[in-house]
Image (cartoon, rainbow, N blue to C red; front, top):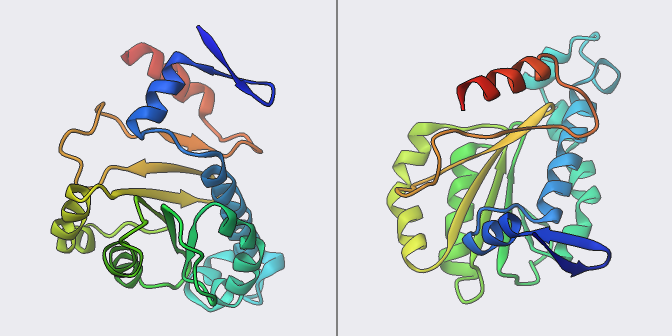
Length: 207
């Protein structure tokens, strides 16, 4: 069964229930992820680095840091939907906050920024914090687990998305009642991933 969503789109019953449960990812979040993946690919490509054609060196040097300004310039449109952090200008004040942690940025610093913004600087408006990162450090998450749970008790949902140039996934944080028992990996829409056919076949066999 589908429902007319307007703008020539239809929603299924499952999509409506997912949206009500807060498990769906808004279109602007997916657009940010795609732009981030494109930026990561450009920053680490031999053409985009001065490391003698070695993309691995770009991970440990300042290539991604230098290109950070280019990324945030591309993401200026996000201000219409959410507060993007870090940011050189004062956020407009939305229910959604997006904290980017990519390249040489310290994971713990980004995590603290997300918590402080939701609990102090925008506590009257903030209802969702999206942390989009290329890194996941369990010890840092565990250190701030009580803060994340306290935000949840106040009605602030904390969503963590881990991104690579080839795909992305959401990792449940402090979610005692998280549905399902698998983390879903979302491949990039603009390119094929090796082994995708085999993975889909294995998924069918294990259902």
